[in-house]
Length: 316
Length: 316
Image (tube, rainbow over all chains, first blue to last red; front, top):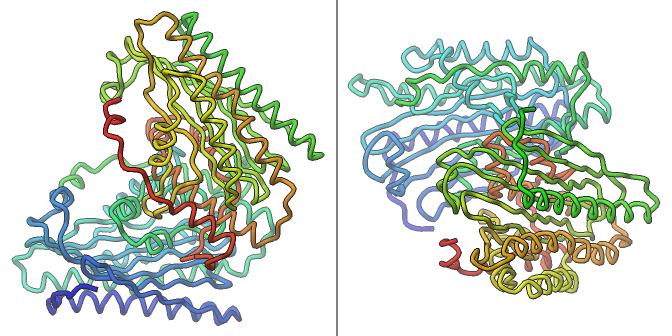
């Protein structure tokens, strides 16, 4: 561990906020396991990044959540000039802290879920990024509606930062498997490089509040769906369908997800990055469910059109 | 299906050769299934490429080979100028035909294997590429030795084209998971953009002979290993180890393999490209076998050093 410069007071607050979110989410999920009669608890794996910072990876292998990871990281130091040039801001010095999670439940009727909220400083610029998206194995419109509803209210309650319609469309474009012509799931929100007018007082607090609040809403967005579906009985056929669909999750994360591919190719901590991969996965050959089956109903939802590119998002 | 221009006589011979290799390999693997008392046979899936050409994907879901694919393709037409510029030759017109296979056996003591042999024309240039590599779940030095021995003899018998030392090192560099610090397996041979002096008579025949012979050697390289290991008894622990290690195979193919990522991102036939993915896969978190265990012995082999870059290979 190299000697590390002290964080600014604001950086410390941002770091505390993501740790607080992590603790709240892990506690909520452990309560779900307890209610199901399981004594599964999160493991804690604290790691240090030699170039500056580190993280806390927490892993749950439970009865309800077959495999889940909730990770925080705080990284700072020097960017390569090539990477720095792709970001807002100037210079090569940066700071980033965030929380990210992926939960793979055991019951095929409970959706997989991902969420991620991060705060970044580079040169004089600061911004936030993140989002949440839901990946069911069986499609229930009311689950999609509930999930979106939480994130819509969240965006509406942060005017000037949150923009539900824009973030929802961004999510539709981002979590899309082009080679399959399928969305990863039923969507949610996705945003990156979002900032506020830095001339306004309290602009940093507004960014941090948005991130912190996003993390704190996660359980409201997910637990009602989990609780509604976790008691549904299933057999080997539903389980096989879930494992096949999890293959799509792997394909997305390894082929397209910027965080995953960038992290792995630039020396990030492999096990923390790949905690997102499902515990048991299958690949078949040309598996296509019968029209009219519940499995096919999911595909109809996943094969919905992709919104056209938003030209202005490229300018961020 | 669009009207397609006739192949040149040599292109037809190349296409016939790869189909002949495919038929021989499939027949050999079906014989293995029969000997094991299984009536599993290869399915045949013939497909057409709207821009020119098509292929025959053959899939085996057997008792010995849990999932295997042996595919041929013949594609021609126009390259994008950007892609054409990365290849030897000039213009945007191209022709390519080849055979590729991946076999995932059920028994964890039988290695997974991949092989691929292809012939390509672009502008006035023609060349061959391919190779074969072995991915065991338990390390037996004599299996590695046998596999390499077959490919060494193959290279030696094609002087001026085959170059075992060079192709072996190329394989070591290519099938390497940088983010894991692990080789995919025990190696083999890998080569690309290999050609011969086009002023010499019979140069096309020499290239085609190399490719055809590579395909025809495959069963000699693999079947003795399969037959030696297929009777080894195993339990759930060995099976779990195999499924975890298959995760590395997925990681390699989706993160690094040029054929896979290029094919998926440029509109190749998804199910034929991803026939390489294993049938059942697991991901754990920080799974590390005990020192001295057979599982750990494999990791010691896979963590061998990577040879330094060969500057001249960049010039090909």
